[in-house]
Figure 1 (tube, rainbow, N blue to C red):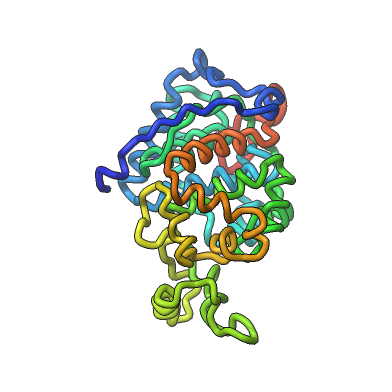
Figure 2: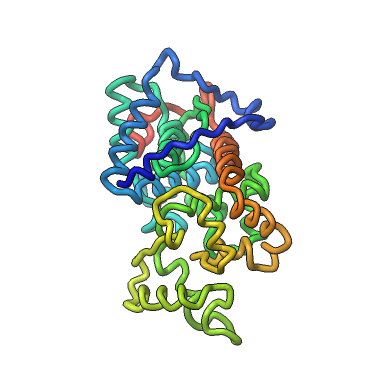
Length: 324
């Protein structure tokens, strides 16, 4: 892993709004019960990313997909055929569960029965971003783990690559996030990969008037057609073309050049709905790395505050895959 992936950008995140006041989370929740938890998770995440650079994006995505379903309660980690792991947005795509298991084992060795799996996801997401060259933020802690998964909620509530921009905004609004959060958190696609099955519809038979999505750069379309020609929908390519593993604002610069991989990415800039609601912020972020990184950090804190279980609600799972 190159040194640029270890660059740590620090962003002072302030003014989290009313969600923080209601959530009962705190920065020092484990200061006495597990004072070394941040360092433990940090070390485990760094080892995982050294082993596989893509794992940074996978850990960030797990936190995102957890928080949008039943709130940030670790429900995505539960095994079982009725679990969120097997919902359509997560099937064959959500990954990193073994890394979470390793983190949990290390944390349990230091502080048995103390740190929730939901909090582990929140901390791991932060360090996944930091070790990819992105911003840091103070993680609010004190979440408890949920007792049930919600597969139907994952199917209906998670923003997807085929959703219109208005639908994505509505799904964000439903969990207390706004349009700025939509664009900032979409910038998380500056790292990671996506499968052919998620964008192949843009490459042929796109519409009655165009074989290829006209908002997709022609040379990129040709490359993707070649990549996906085998018919294996699980073949992957970088979400952020020419800046695969570095957390920066290049993702937004790609959108200005019609090089967004998913229709939900390019739609932020090129769709009629995006032109009306998100295009101007895409342009702002493409021109200002500092603005993007600051807004991303703020939005991550807001997202981590979606309906957490606190106090006596839920439990602290001993094994992230099953309830106690």
